[in-house]
Length: 198
Image (cartoon, rainbow, N blue to C red; front, side, top):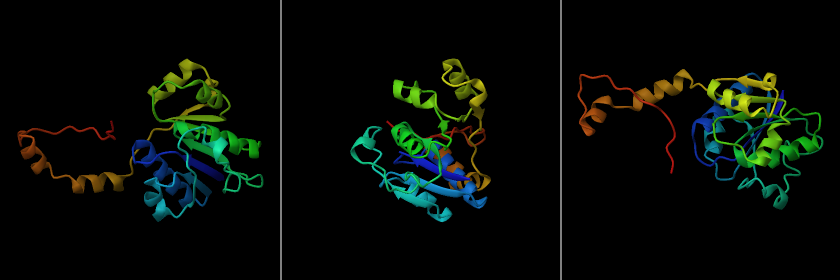
């Protein structure tokens, strides 16, 4: 497959970890990947070991496409035959541009969150060949909105690779954590991993 991955993220969160794992997995399977990111994205550094073809565009908001045409960037030219897969709300018009350049391509949209869609996002989503929901909860919301036929929605749970979990465990000092927060040392700890931002 030839896949154009587009992400507007600057920092790393669950969706960005998902994208990094996905790119690495597709490259391991010898698929042709183009990745379009913001110039200051943390993903540039994170994706470096997988060595995908990376190009940058501002992607500050969806309407940047009118000010800075992606024409000439890999994956956006008329001769390219990449299927665009988008990650993040700012990428909507960029994906529409990629599809206009290559009408035979299939748009795949990943929904990571339950936030409501605006009118433009709903319009683009309705044209998706597949909508990937990262959980059954997200899929239920998408089915209830009825923007795409239910058969186009697929649930592909986001998971962390074992090596990522092992690395996190090695870096976590449970004793120091319990002492810092005055927690009993003979009780189990239950945690939730996620990105925290204002």
